[in-house]
Length: 204
Image 1 (cartoon, one colour):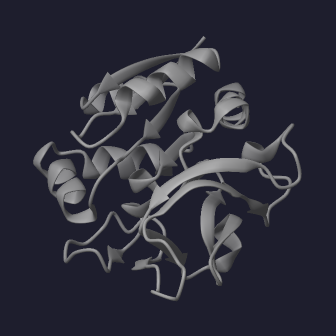
Image 2 (cartoon, helix red, strand yellow; image 1 turned 120 degrees about the vertical axis):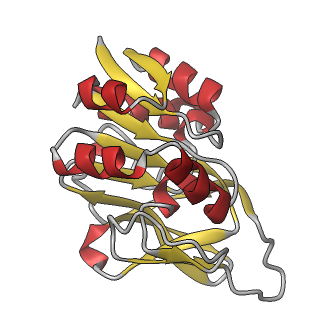
C-alpha cells in the first residue's frame, strides 16, 4: 500500500479524505510533521475554509517550505478545494500571500441574476487535459461535488486540467502540472467518480 501524508493544518476535512484514500488502497497518515511529509510516497493537501486563516496556519506550523520541497522533488501531490487555492499567489478573499507554486490569483464568482454563491452541489467537469492521470477510467464529463465561492485563475492556461460552468461563468476546476495535481471539487464526497479519481492518484 502507498503511504500518503495528509497534511494537517487545522482546516481540512481529514476524516473524509482519509476514508476515501483508504478505499482507494492507500495508507493515509494525518500529519503536520515535515519529516513525515518527506518520507511519504505521496502527499495530499486538503482544505475547508478561508484563504487567510489557512496560510496563517501553514506558516505557524512551518509547513510552507516542506510543501514546496515535496512538489519540487517530483513526489505525487494532490491539493483538494482550499488545498488548490493556497497553491496560488493570492486571493480576493483576503490579504495573505499564498504559496506561489502556481502563478495566478483566486477570484470570487461574479454576482449575476439566478446565480447561487457559494457554488454548492453536483456539477459536470469538462476535462481540457483529457489524458491527465486523474481522469483515467472516467466518463467524458463526470459529475463531481463542489462547495466554493472562489475559483482559481492560473496565469499559464496550460496547467488547467478541467473546467466547470456555474451560471454563465466557466472557471478552472482542476490543474495538472507534472507531479502536481489539484482540484476545486471534493473527490471524497463525489461517490464512485471521486473514488476513481483518488484511486488514479494512489495508483500512480
